[in-house]
Amino acid sequence: MGGLSPMHWMIVAIAAVLLFGAKKLPDTARSVGKSLRIFKAEVTRSDQEEPQAPPALPSVEEQARQLEQQAAALRAQAAADAKDKPVDAKDKPAAS
Image (cartoon, rainbow, N blue to C red; front, top):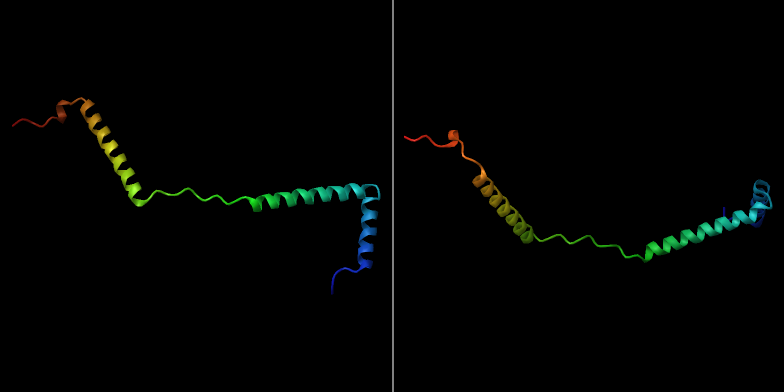
């Protein structure tokens, strides 16, 4: 119930030679080693990167000030639109 004994490793090695052939085994081992090095480098790089803090949200007072500025701009725009709008005869109040 422990790890693999030397006999088990020998069986695995023989099975690998039979499956891949003696000529392709070094290339396969090289490819696996290269892949592991790349993986290790990426994991190390991601561990070293500091997580970025989300941008700070404006305070409630700042949000209220911005909303007041937007409302003032909309009121000014509505007033300017009302001045430029031609007055129709039906919009005038009836004279008594």
